[in-house]
Length: 273
Ligand code: KIV
Image (cartoon, rainbow, N blue to C red; front, top):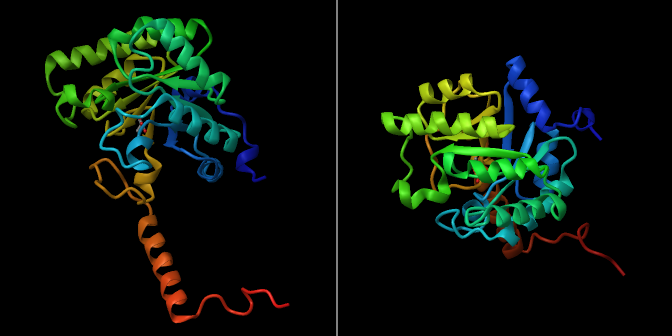
């Protein structure tokens, strides 16, 4: 066990504390056991099992078709592989919007069956009653406002939010209401830096930006984006730290060549009588 994995367990209180102290929070998505274990060693504060997995693991065009069972399955793998980071599960499209009862039952499954420690819900003012009830029954909630991918067809594409006055007010009011409802944190996705700054300064919960500038209390990115494993497209806010797709292609290409040339396996890689 490394020094990092012996560090103190991150809880929802850590988010509030780090915000108060002005310490930035680093969040990454994770979808499987071994990636979670590796990311634990990086010192990341939280692992988000995002419904982005529907695109970056399964090749779908959007997050809309991510099923509840698929999200539970991947959340369990990540929770099993993580020790210190706070594990947050993304509630998929239509698993919480139809009624508060449905939201409680489904969110509860992430904690009871999959080992998540919090859930994330997309939406603003309209989902505040649901968020309140979830928190009342003991389920910590991370909000998600700005460009919410589950509503991508309503947005009509990935447009930067907060440039129109009416929208700005909606996001400020939504953030305030989610804060008052008791969210420990809220993702701010694809919005202007001044709007994200204003929201971050006005709430107690920690704001976690993705494409929302540096004034947020923390940042989140999709792991497959930053390691260069998902290469379909690269949003402007993604910083690529590695070229894993290139590494895999090169390694697989060398294997194919070695097999065809008869260079693999050698005697050392085989078993005598
Ligand atoms: O699904 C996801 O991975 C997300 C984050 C990128 C915020 O919602």
